[in-house]
Length: 468
Image (cartoon, rainbow, N blue to C red; front, side, top):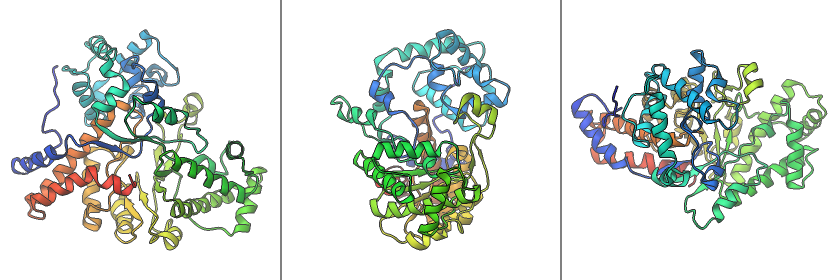
């Protein structure tokens, strides 16, 4: 069947409201993309090699795609997960799996992103199916062989103004540095400080992570004080290479302080393998408070996206590794958990704290009220399981009456799938245009105010919240 994404997709169905939304969307449709949180490998842009095949580009690295296929009985290995570079026959077989199971994505945001990518980037005009899988594979492969479909050319075509990566504190930034030094490169790609594995003293590998931190900084991390100094040193290194934020994702966001003596004691016990689970959890919570203190001193924006049970299916994690589609949300609590942090730093002029959640009930109950009082706090956009049309609409309704639009973060694409970036940002722009159009139609905003707000949500909010 032929398909072409409808020009009014995601806009309100009422003709009068839709007309307003069209005008708002036209004003923001072609604005540059600001992507302050994502997982694209900077080496992709440094090497600028042609993408090898449609499956390796659009399916295998994207857990949004693979998880639903897996849930419907397609083994992850049949989708190329954990297999390294795919031979042409294997890549074609992976692509056939997607096309044969296209109906699985009906009603999902993945379907929306995919249709936008296929039509607007690769010129596909037929709905994927088992029957046309090979034809579509060949069409996309032909496009990928052309210079205008290399990563740097697509970066320019997507109109990306800034792209943030997510990086280990001990990364040497060889790719970032080489990219920045390349006279042929004019884009902006910045690192993000992600210290999770260095803060979880109860997890396997923590002692090795601290040894790496010591080797990287030349600071002894055997004691708590040196460990903290080493983290501070790496944050300075990140800032020197353009970083603007830190990124944290733990099971909760409690920030209960420990005394210096107790923190030092638990640190030593954890390195010796003698700390209890309760002690290492308390240590991580204390270190989150330390991260906020550091942000007040060095200015790095602090982003929190808690309450995810990582690697829920141990056999899959053992075989395929992390980020393979089985991280599952749990309930989140922010108000009491963050009180120690906010008591100390919530009004500090140098702290920006952006709160994300996978628990929608927290938007109106906790996150919006916190952002509506504390100057440091911003309500993070829906992300991951919630970066979907109806969830984004619910977010706006949940937070706007409490904090308006200015205390929100701007859209976060949070993606490893490079070609989905413009589709995801376009989705957000359409949805926000619709929300604003409804306010105009209800005579709660004048259209000039809605227009100004639509532009700010794309071009001002993420720059302000992330200090870009």
